[in-house]
Amino acid sequence: MYKHIIMLLFSFYCLYGQNPTPYAALGDKIYDNVKDIEKLKSIGDYYLFKNDIDRYIQEVNQTKQEGFALSQNASIEKSKAYLEKLRKLSEDNDYYMRAVQNSFKDALNDENTTLFIQIIESDLIKPEDHKKEILDYYFAHSKDINETGIIKHFLDEDKKLKAKELALRKKAMNKKRREEEKIKRIREKDRLEQQKLEKQLDEAVKKKKMQIREEQKEELIKSI
Figure 1 (cartoon, one colour):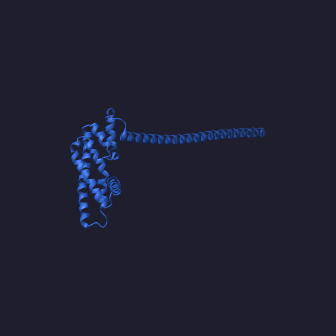
Figure 2 (figure 1 turned 90 degrees about the horizontal axis):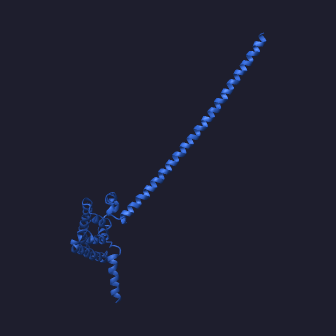
């Protein structure tokens, strides 16, 4: 009984735990994508390939168990056999991922909204790499698409970005307004000082003229 439990735990760890370390550079993408590839069975016409997808998933899970069981002291033959399985599975993985990309393009071109939603919510594509295409399609078909999931995430992102841009513009405008008001105050101060200087100059000139006239009167009186 105890041994049976240990085997079950080991199997669970192999299937759902971290990936095997041998040839991880090749194996990780296979093991990380398998759950997403399984979702293909409920997308578009991929249900027609359910048996092929199930067979692929089974092969991946079996190979994953072999990877965990493969020790550093494993024979060269076992290591090569495991590597060959990974290479074959890698080709299948790439095939499915390319198929999803093509289906995404078809959904856009054919305006197949159901397929479009299924793909962008499946984790089979990287939404960030197709953000513009996704939002363009949404805005063109917003009457048929609920604002949920990845679309809501993108719209919320854009709202936050626009709010940030608006705040920065307001800040820049306020700064510009403050600078303009400062310049206006400086110019007004200069204008008042100039007026004061001109007034003082006028008064000085008038005073000087009166002084000259008085001196001229005195000179005239003396000459008589």
